[in-house]
Length: 161
Image (cartoon, rainbow, N blue to C red; front, side, top):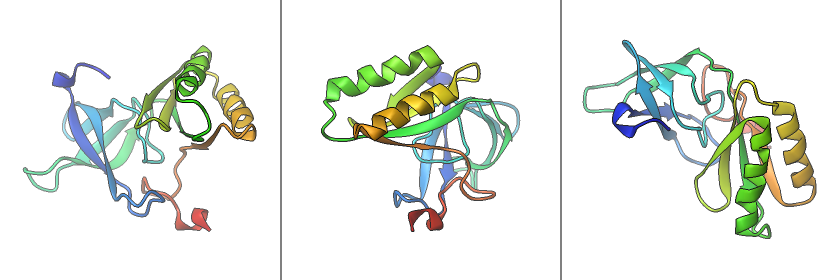
């Protein structure tokens, strides 16, 4: 994340989401007009990644801008990881750091839930293969974060069935 003095919070409304939350606040760098560049890895939004330029409009002057659309995709890709409680806490960070060979970075929401960014020159498929191997071993569960619903950033209720 860049210098926080250069950043502001914007809101991503999720509509339906498996987590039960209705929105997510993310750090962004203001650009011209209603455009913002996403500066942290989203923990809940689908179809939104670090470096994406989004259009966000404040419903009124007292409220944070709300993301309306992605205007320019950055090429970054997001994955989310939830570690099994049986995976030792120090091991979790070491595993994620091991993915850095594929041009990744990560942020933790808590001790078990992490968002992983794969930079555009990174090897996304190798990251998927490694996460799948760990999932097969029962160490974690992961998901990709491509858009789930047209025109929105939430999940599709049909995915929960």
